[in-house]
Image 1 (tube, rainbow, N blue to C red):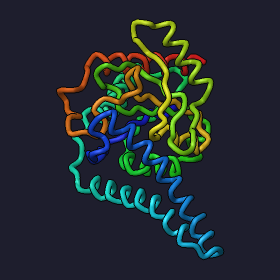
Image 2: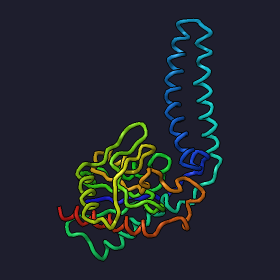
Image 3: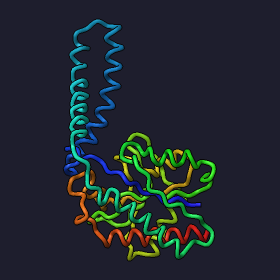
Image 4: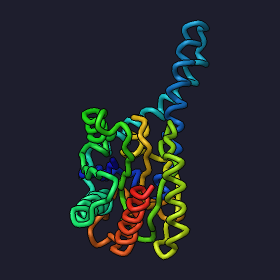
Length: 259
């Protein structure tokens, strides 16, 4: 068996996603935020042992940084949802289009499940619930996640590692197979990358012990076009990128089936 999964929900449009520079600053602040929480714990312990005003003064810096994080969180919850043309109508569309094609051209040896859950943007809860419910049926299944696969300036991009705090590594055999297809079909313009600033349903499959590969079409410079922004609209979807990604995944399915 093989699971093809997209997702149906969209994200809000916080200030931190306005530009690649904003995102770089945000990633630094996230790292600093975790460090600040750890520092405050240590300072609290030190302050309970050693009565010193210096400790309390030093604690102001991480406290201010965490207040900034709180402000960013509140600002995010006050913004509208992104239209979601690339993230992730594109991935959901590829799943549905391939499912339609598989009705007419079924694989000889592989049963494909096409799934488009919700709640990806808040922690992939839809994917997690699906895998819990079908744990026994999918014990030996492959898992392919499709997320944001039509951004301009990108191409079919398979992810070798994802996750911000914990790394989730794609199945080496599937990564190697994708690399072979990229070499055999150069006209598709496929390449690999990592996703260090988030995770997808693919990470949930990896947590559940399934061999998984995720497609997120980052540009070669690592930017995800129009990510969580108001301009993630149909007019900014690249039909050629979408078609090449669909062709790549179709080839991927054929080769999985012939193994």
